Image 1 (spheres, rainbow, N blue to C red):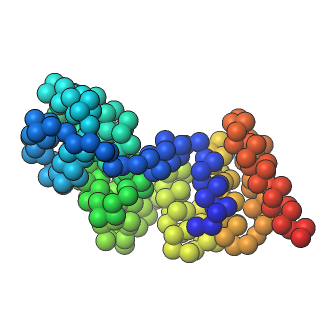
Image 2: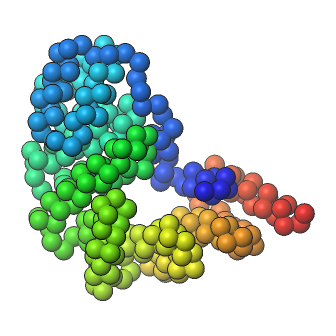
Image 3: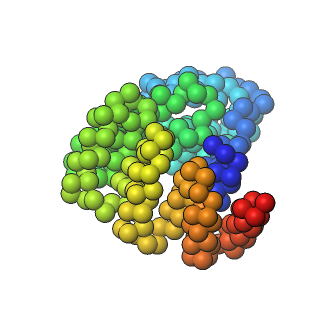
Length: 274
């Protein structure tokens, strides 16, 4: 990814939290006491996949953090444990406890929420060995969601993304997306998913078509202009890149984003004139 592409992506407001998580250090300095480690081992019985990552993280907690974790764990407060790990910039372990909550209060909403947390955590995982595990955890949660709600297209789309990106069954994932498209072709999430897959596979013209479909389905989804600018820049279509950035700038209400975009537009115009 080029420097300019990174800039475009970082500007998007929806990515702010996970950008912060990505750049935050994941290794803490001090170790937890033995009591906290033991409580972590009890939690491990509830989820067999992220055990090693939870144990390592528990041992890295300082004394104050360990005491707080112990208090939340003893009270079986899954919501507080999610917030605890979010504050420590560990969305993977936050998802771990979201799944525990889903097991305790099993319904489509909780399983979908846990699956999405696992899925999003894959984008900001520094330990690459954990990524396949997170995809499998997410896939499990989406399957649980579909057990409760078989026609839940959001769960189907996320499941398909897991199959394409992390479970080694890309054609199965594409088949699910095609099936969703038959009944819900204007689904913004669906079209975005197709577009992102096209970008990753280098099919940039197809990606452009999909991002325009997003805008036709929802003209208020202005982040599509940023994605189009990104694709056009990869195609060295500077004038089209500028046009998409101008459209985004005209619609955004975020003054910081607008200022950054306008600044970058001027840089692009300067590069054309050189």
